[in-house]
Amino acid sequence: MSANALDLDTGTLTLDAVRDAADAMKGVVVRTPLLENPDVNEKLGGRLLIKAEHMQRTGAFKIRGAYYRLSRMNDAEKQCGAITYSSGNHAQGLALAARITGTTAMIIMPDDTPATKVESTRALGATIMHFNRDTDDVNEVIARLKAETGRIVVPPSGDLRIHAGAATAAVELVEQAEAAKAKIDTVLVPCGGGGLTAAAAFVMSELSPGTKVYAAEPTLFDDTLRSLAAGERVMNPKGQRTICDAIMTPTPNEQTFEINRRLLAGGVTASDDEVRTAMRFVFENFKTVIEPGAAVGIAAILNGQAEIAGKTVAVFTTGGNIDAERFCSLVNTTA
Image 1: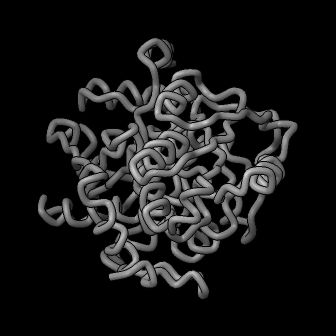
Image 2: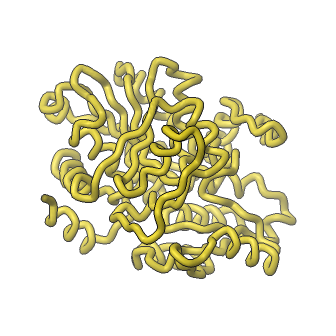
Image 3: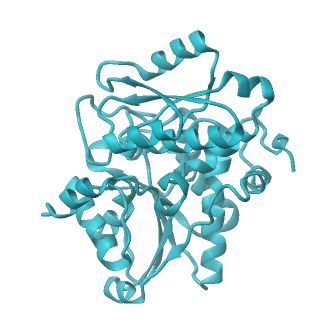
């Protein structure tokens, strides 16, 4: 299968494209585990399946789409290098993908990005610049730097190759659930720009059409939920903050929202305190560390917004990029 399986002219994401992405990333991307704890299931009254993308290389699912996109660059594009904006997970994924594929990456990061994500990205060889998420238009910053440097824009979402790469995680989920003899009723996806959410919704519509997919968002950054209700993209108010830095986006991506508008069953939310509780829940019951943005789906189960009693619910834990000090501080300040 070739990259032409991805029809960029019609904007169509296909299973052939996802399979092409999976082939391209063999030996590069980890097949992350599907976690399940029977004691937790007994307490919840249903089956909880955790697709542990926080165990992926660079600590998040983002390497999937970033690597697939860069692997399809021609030599001239690789000479130019890539440029993107990211609060950390896509940044690290793109930086590693650039190193593996023999190109370079420039990352535009919010100036309030956790220091550990900045330093991890820099350590992978990326050039880092900062912007203020309240006063700067990041699209204008990217456009200016693209014009100055000639770099190729590789966004966190909104590129069909990025979506195809992300969708490989959802295909793995379906295969692993089948092996575990689990029929998935619901999938919860932590949602920022909406790329993984759209990719998962597409895969489920093709491979498990009876499965409902929901976007999971922080309470103060529920732009996808509100956009679904409005039938059009809406913005989050400026100046708000959440501990879920990885999914603190201003508005849904235009391309991913069109997929999510058609395919999602809805959205769920969780407060910062509920996210802290979910992080601690995962640590105590699954002996693993996830970052705040990755815990929103778990939090929505624990706060009752996502029903699990008598059901099988799969949740993506999308990242684990948090330093020990911040993790301990957050889980030890739960309400």
